[in-house]
Picture 1: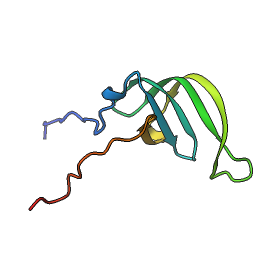
Picture 2: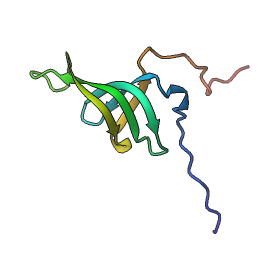
Picture 3: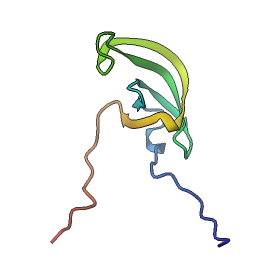
Picture 4: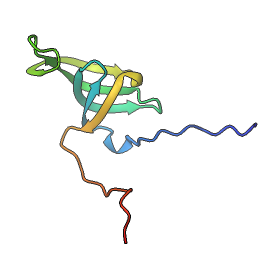
Length: 99
């Protein structure tokens, strides 16, 4: 029982360092900025961060309004989605069985 395994993060964000990313949070907030750092718990440090504000009439819909936040620390427990700002890249499906 003395076998303590080191926990590894399932995400490797190092390839996104110093690149713009978009982050979605619990509660519907969204922010984008340049990734400056992260840890295994997905706490993120973003620079030049802008938050996309929600529509005042519909809290589940984002508006075109933004506000500048500057350098921010995003708590990993509230992060729902992280994606590159310049789009996604397609990866092969690891669950497809090749015959």
